[in-house]
Image (cartoon, rainbow over all chains, first blue to last red; front, top):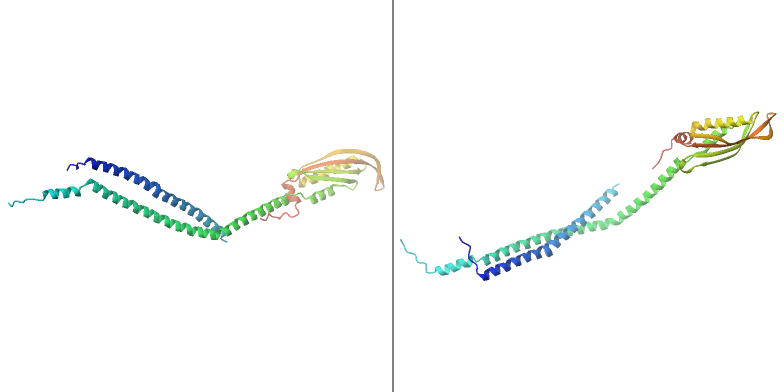
Length: 63
Length: 217
């Protein structure tokens, strides 16, 4: 089975679509998923710090 | 054999071509991939929201407990200061020099025909040693030998309790004065003794009035 022959118009559309797809991926990872992951990591670090403080104070306050 | 005639073959071919249109297939794949990305983002957002709520709970707990923790830290610092001061005072008390046993030894060394007219003493810095200056007069047929006996006695007695005992004459001179001791006239000598010794570990056990004292912390 030979691949269907594409017209020039179709090739142009495919090329634009590919470029748009790459741009979309860049926007998705840079402006959506990246900041979300960063904020999540920062929150996890804060939770760990506070939890260690809480555990330390709890163990110190034990009679 | 029956003969089949397909009069709509052109329309069927167009329909098949429309179905296999790469643009259409590509758009469908893209839409599917976009839906997957959206779902993945929503999943991550949900996890982030969950972590945020956990963070709020932890922060609430910390806000409740923080004043107590700060007060406890301050109290710990205060107690550490008190402990440090107590330890310094304890060291000072334990390393002090007891003069009473020393004076007792000196009083036992002085014979009846010798007198002390002056005594100056000081403890050197950081308990490195004790320096004493004894001044007095001795009377006897040979007043210098009486003073020498006193010196020997001091070496012997102080050597039992302290280490590095040195007793030396700074001055030893005959006096013109005659003194009557027990109905006998005797010449006199003036002496000045320099005594140096270290209040070592031997001194602590011998000199301390309360040897059982233990450091209380």
